[in-house]
Image 1: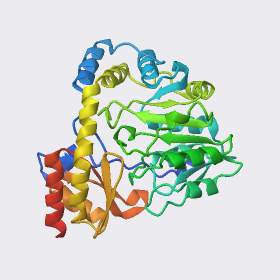
Image 2: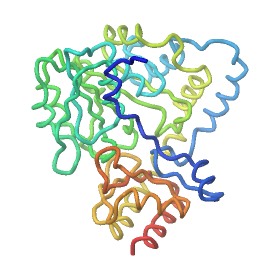
Image 3: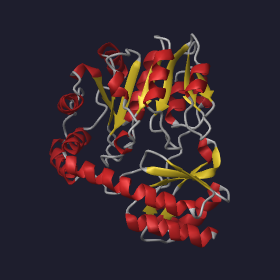
Length: 361
């Protein structure tokens, strides 16, 4: 059966290994998943209660406009509702952007080590994918990104903080990138880990939305809000582009259960504060422990740490599975000697360090 030839260029996304699969394969009953940057504290109790109440409306289609959630987001970010597009995770927004702004005569630019879904979105519409070399510490390089842009570039994807390295572009670098991009090139700032970026020179793209019409900022409820299984994300941009994105979106992209959970999670400031505090406290402790065992550690601005391994990352990944710990080997992202480790609960982080010491020291 003939298929769209562009699809053959797509490398399937490789998710983290599920807990249930590891339990089956290794006969374990307690597995720590430190692979997918999920919230170690889980969802807000308020979000779970709202989701349970929403189940009673399971026979009805959800609100396609996500009116209530958008109203809350509008108040939170001081933007009119017309600036928002809600989708099934921020991944959905990337696909919509590709559908609206790309075609086989155009190109998009990404960094060498970055979130894999950008490439999937670009290839799915047959556009050219340009990969800019990373900076000296494997993160984004504004110089290399700009060098890859030409008159045919319609999208530049920048995850800030970056996944998988955890680095970020500071205020000066973001401003330099925005100032030098041509007006027909849209910058997509993926801020999936925004809530964990607590450094003084980090700035959100929201500070520039009113000055740069060629800017899109995306956020997700999957990380700090603990709703990865509910699949809710959103983009913020100028209303005319938001309108175009909504035209190619599926009629009912997010379930009413997920919408209710997201709205409740947004209102639970205490749970968000606990989630951020856990990462803020455990990130340096885990980084210091890893530095005593592994040859190079990248302490970033997200809820994870990436490190270089003294043995092939895939081998270390397999050995850790035997200890009931799932991490993320980064061979699929072009880093076969690196693993990404989600910051877990204190006991999980200590168990990881002990397992690594037992395996490598």
